[in-house]
Amino acid sequence: MSAESAIWAESLSKAYRSGGTQVVVFHELSLQVRPGERLAIIGESGAGKSTLLHLLGGLERPSSGQIFYGGQEIAALGDQALADFRNRTIGFVWQNPSLLPEFTALENVMMPLLIRGVEPGAARKTARLRLEEVGLESRQEHRAGELSGGEQQRAALARALAGGPRVLLADEPTGSLDFRTGEMIVGLLNEVHLAHGLTSIFATHNLSFASRCDRVLELRKGSLHTASMMDFQSPVVVEHKVPVVGGNNEVRTGGSEPVVRGNNEVRTGRLEPVVRVDEAVERTGRLEPVVRGKNEVRTGRFVPVVRGDVERTGRLEPVVRGIKKDATRLDGGTYV
Ligand SMILES: Nc1ncnc2c1ncn2[C@@H]1O[C@H](COP(=O)(O)OP(=O)(O)OP(=O)(O)O)[C@@H](O)[C@H]1O
Ligand SMILES: [Mg+2]
Image 1: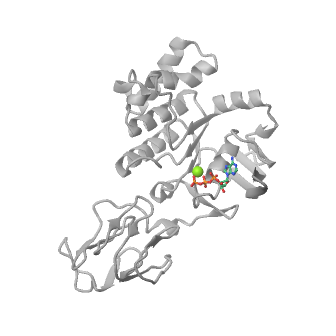
Image 2 (image 1 turned 90 degrees about the vertical axis):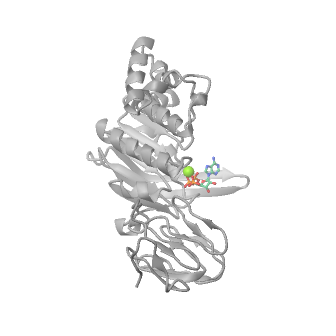
Image 3 (image 1 turned 90 degrees about the horizontal axis):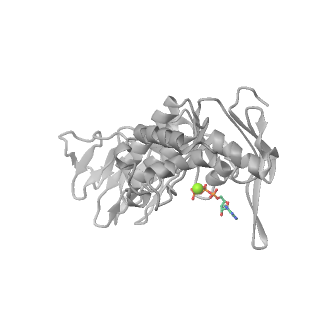
């Protein structure tokens, strides 16, 4: 085992038996996470990100393989010892905050401390500090069920930190939040990661978030692959720098949220922009898949793919051709 690793998984396999069939999520996967590292795990839906976090967090047991935290092999622990280990070592944040709605934010944050037997006065004091840290001091007596989604996620982060964990595991922590609230949570996660000297693993579809981590691994076909930061140049969010092109159809392209408005519906997503036009669009880029076709719109793994009647090339300076040839940018610039 590497003494350098905060978390070290070796030959990790996980298979589920579902009905009569066996689903192998991953087979003999290995992973080493350095102390203080902020690791993002990305991958298509169903790739096994949550499963991997559950195993690493000791919430599920692997079919085979070992997981070490420092010198401690967690698969060897019995259920109660594993629960104690989780309580003391790991903070979890989920896509849905899973707070107890009838309890106040403060009581929710106190919970992990009470479970480990901390005296209520001390638990309350620590919980208050954690709630202040996430900017929720004025909401601490509110019932969790009365908080907004973003506030609930902040309270969930405070709860994850309450027990002074060494490791933070978050599964799509921005997954159910709007863009701005998600950005706020990303900011907080990064702040607390540093402030608490954590080792953090974030499973996310949010490529902008992933690109701000120290390392990005993609879970694909049961294996982990290093994802080049180059892959993220297109999706990185650059607010206020989104060129806008007006024309017959308005075309707006940007780092992470290309928008093409046609005669049909336009929808953009935070991670997987979707563009619909009723004519052929082609978009090519250095790292980007090229899709030709009509009408239907699909999004790619790292970059949006657009079908319709526009061609867009270039990674940083999108070029729009075809029916958008004469378009001028609304900010006064022109496209070549
Ligand atoms: N308890 C279970 N029983 C059977 N199969 C399961 C179970 N949990 C997960 N799976 C299967 O394991 C695979 C990986 O699921 P997992 O939830 O880890 O994916 P994911 O990458 O987190 O996806 P998403 O991005 O949608 O959250 C899927 O095929 C899923 O159906
Ligand atoms: Mg998942």
